Length: 411
Image (cartoon, rainbow, N blue to C red; front, side, top):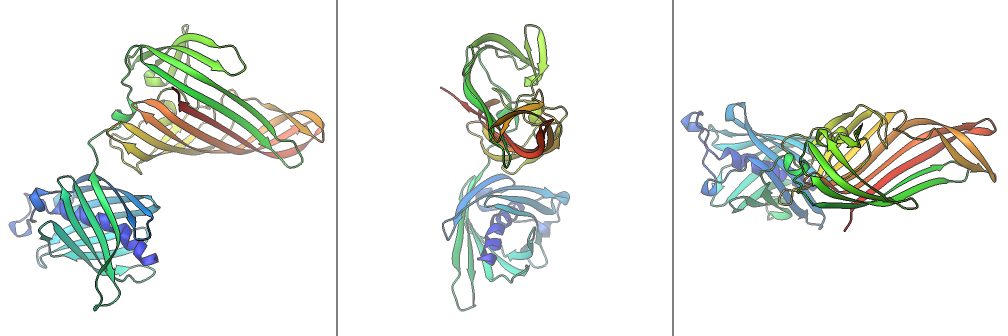
């Protein structure tokens, strides 16, 4: 239901904030000291929360809680991952006059307030007192249960009348996120002799009404053996095979933490859309602390393989702290030529071949990439744009161009 969805989305934020405030803050007056949670439990920090609604649909969110304003309040930021869209900030405090926890919940759908008398063993019940949404909410409450030193369950309950029992419509389980930093995901930990293998492909296609579709494809495999694992000048011995072309065997070095590639004393910026390693030129500098939903901007200052100079947005989709793996979404748009792309294309119309000049329009791209300690494990990127095709004996035509790359780890 419309209302239930909003209430369910707000539940974890309330708990995290309340429990974190249960830790005494030394500089507050004695009458404002908050009782600690069970066994000193505190929710300050990062949390990964997963569960499902009563209809069986999954619910996955990330929460970040920290004391603010000298510790008098706790601010919690919440972002739903599945289903996406819900954003909120909670400000939580203890009201010594009422002897209640008060939660001021502000989100992108409205505002609500909850209060709670405090802990009862390992449970905390937090009840709604007012709400300001497009539709009124039923009477509702949150029942939180501590399940371990770094985990808890929460159930959202509601009822339509005072005579009815509260019924649960949503459950979720939260685990404290591991203490990792961005370096755990993007800094390589290579060893001499280590092998990195991948299989890749690229497609370029043009489509326009009245014209035969034009498609070019290339694919192949690449095998890299680490000769020098130093992050400052990582050296590989590589064997690359583009299908239909002779195999290439050579060695080269990545400098500037993957931004520059040197072969036989000739160095160039690494502006490939993908490759074996994390490339700051395209991915920028990630924040030190990462969580699902974290975003940052990257200014790509020069044309690259699948796009022009532009600003790109990176979003953390998911991460696996135990295995140091992270999946990112990249999306951006820009105008202009790509690096080293052809300015003409061979097309066919009404059975006749033409060499048409290409005038590019605005490019828009999106893709997903998984890194394991700085090594590209999976990568997909699609870019689309309108282009104008023209030639002396060919009518000016607007066509749709698609380019995409696929790269996956290979045995």
